[in-house]
Length: 210
Image (cartoon, rainbow, N blue to C red; front, side):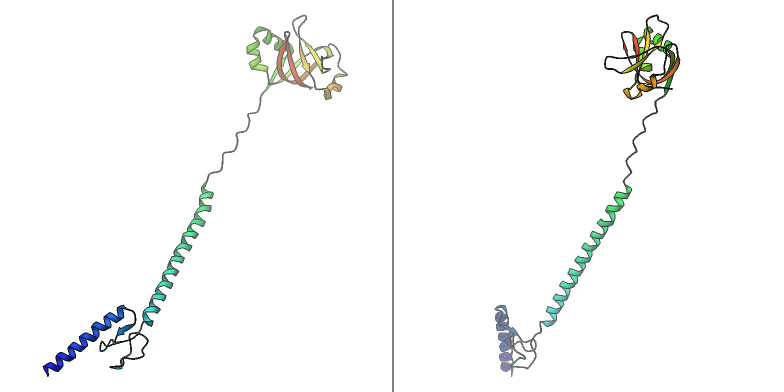
């Protein structure tokens, strides 16, 4: 009896050993009931009749796990894209609008008589340029002449306290018609832009009769 037990145990150990060896070769698998090596394609163990190990459940579990993992990864990426898409417009909305360009200060109009304009330039041409040149001037004076320059530009000479000095008010060609009715001695007011000084005469440009 002990000998039979030893033989059975030895045979079972041998079968399991061979099963492990053949399983490593990928051809056979040990029976889960008796350990006898059986073909991986067998429907049942030829020795004890037990069904072979089923790999179908493991395969299904693996496939389902991979599918679940892919779903999770896809959901995470979609959430990241949604966050980026919503954060970009929000950042654009938070950007402050560029400041509006500052409006150019309105130039003040300077009211002066032709005689005072001449005296200021006679006293200090640098100081008078700072006060009048490039500024809008409304000048009042007496007409001493209505003439044309070298380039046929019409101008009016306005009397000053100097016997041979005057202020010259130049008009654009298209405004020459407004000067036809002027006569010497008439007192007028002109709106001009202060210009430079030529041979001691203060010059006004782009003038219009008021």
